[in-house]
Amino acid sequence: MQSVKIDRLLRVAICVLLAVFVYVVYAGIHQPVIAAGDSAPSFTIATDTGRSITLPNFGGKVLILNFWASWCPPCVQETPSLSRLAQEYASKGLVVLGVSVDKDPNAYQNFLKKYQPAFLTSRELKLHEDFGTFMYPETYIIDANGKVLKKIAEGVDWNDPGIVQYINSLL
Image 1 (cartoon, rainbow, N blue to C red):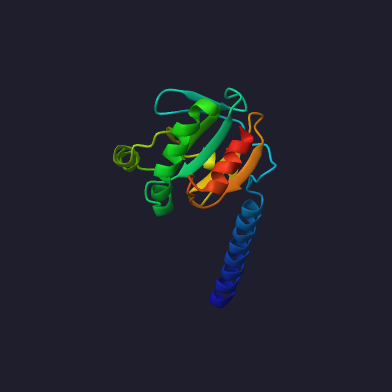
Image 2 (tube, rainbow, N blue to C red; image 1 turned 90 degrees about the horizontal axis):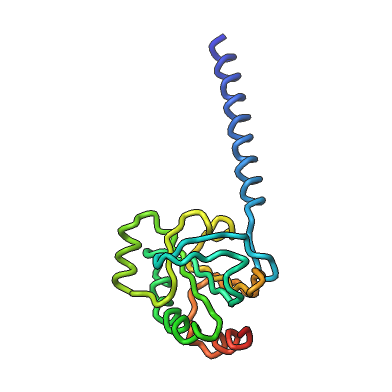
């Protein structure tokens, strides 16, 4: 009698685990992943300077939306070149917004103090999910109408002639 109860319990446990597994796979498949050619999800985000960036209406400019984290070595590496790009192209119609996914506000603040990015920054923990971003850095180049023109899923040297030529072609 005891073994029948154990057998029944094991069957129920296996069914529950199978149901959980199917749900996780289903949720993973249906997670939005934004790619070039897609419309970027609408969002409003407050930057550290108090400026509000709203998509799709952010002043008719090209937006470089960069998701990063303080613990990410490629994110640290690309910050100086992204800063130079932001400074050089600000007057030409380019907005650079770096969105940190750091859960620890102190780590975020320490990064800002140490690397002093010369672009708009914000710490926001949910927006990256709307884009399907889970690895960092990941950058979206978005036109004035909210269309994703390019998705870059790695660190970039923003001074690279090919990147500069591409940015120039958009402005």
